[in-house]
Image (tube, rainbow, N blue to C red; front, side):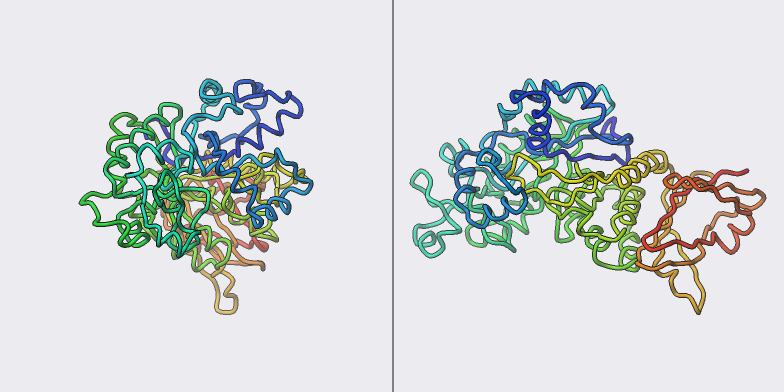
Length: 490
C-alpha cells in the first residue's frame, strides 16, 4: 500500500452509463480521453482517495446474446429503465471476453488519460478483475480448456443449465455454491497450476494500468470453498492456497498496489491472511441495514488491526440503493458510521444524490431521477469531515443510561484521538430519540473547558472537562441522528 492513506475512501463509478450521460452534451463519440477537466474536478467528493471505474473491460458478444434472450433479465431491465432501447443493453462487465479496455471507452490509451487526470487530482484508479470465470468466447476457453471445470455429456444432459458445449468439450458454467449457475460464463479451475499462473500474469497486466484491483467474489477461489462447490470435479486440493500463490507473484511486480476482495460468508479474515489489503464488510452492512445497535456494537468489538483492513459500504452496484434499503433517515445514520470507522470506505455513484433505482450492470444508460440537494450537502460535509477525523487511534466507547430510560442502548460511540481526545462520533441507530452519557476515559480532559464542534451539522457546544472525564458526555439525539464532533480546549 505504498503511498496509499491508511483509511482510503473509494468512489465507484459505473463507467459506461456515466460516459453515456456525458455524451448527451459532449457528442456520441466521446471516450475517456475526451472527458473535460471540469468533469474530473467534480466527479468525486472532496476527501476521496481513489475512483473505481467499474466495467472498463471488453464485454462478451456471446454473453450479450444470452442476455437478450433471457426473459427474466429483460423484465428486470425494463423495470429499471422504462423506455429501454436495444442499444441500452451493453452486456455484463463481469462477463469478460478479454482484459483489454473496451474500444467504446477509447481503449487502453484513453484509460491511461483517465488515470493521469485522476492522479493530477490526488486520486488513484481502481479496476475490476473476475478470477472465478470468463465469458464463453474468451480465447482461453478453446486454447486452454484444461484451465476450466470439465464434465461429461451425461451430466450436461441431466442438468443443461449447469454445463455448456464448447470446442467439443463439456465445461461448467460459473457459479457460487448457493445460487443457480450463471448462464453467460464458464467456470475456471482454481486448483489448476496453469490457471493460477495465468491469473497472476493478468492481474499484473491490469495493475500496470491502475493503482488497485477489486477482485470479484474472491472467496470462491479458496481451496475450501472451491472444493465444496465442485466436489469430485475439483479433484484433490493443491498444497498451497490460490491467493497466496497469485498475490505473491503480483506483489513482486507491483508492491504498492492495493488489492480489494469482494468477500462474503464471514471469510474476511481468511482473505486478509491470504494477502488482500481490504475485504468487503458485508456483515456490517447487514447489521446497519437490518439489525440494532447491539449487533453493530458487537461487530465493532473485533480487533482493530482486522477492522483496519475492511472496506465499509451501505451501497454498491450489487446492493439496493441506500435511499430505498435504509429508509426514513437510517441511511444517514449508517453513512456516518461507515465514514468514521477504521478501514476503507466505499461510496457509490448516485448515492450522494439520493438515487433510488439499482441499475442492472448489463445496462449502459441510467434512468432520469430527481436529485436530493439536501442529501448531497450532508454527504459532502460528512466525507470532508471524515478525511480530517480518521487520524490517531480509534477506540470504541461505552454509553451509560438510567433505569427508567433504556434508550442509551441504541447509541453507538467511538473516538479518534492522539495525546488528547480530538474527535468523537455518536450515532443513534433507532427510529426514536435516544439519550445517554458517552464514557470518555481520558483524565486529561480535566482542567479545561472544551468546545465541541459538529463537523457535519455545524453546531457548537461547550462542556466542562471535569464533567466529561467524570459522568461523560450527555447526548440527546433524534431518530437516526448523529454527532461528528471535534473537541478543542477553550
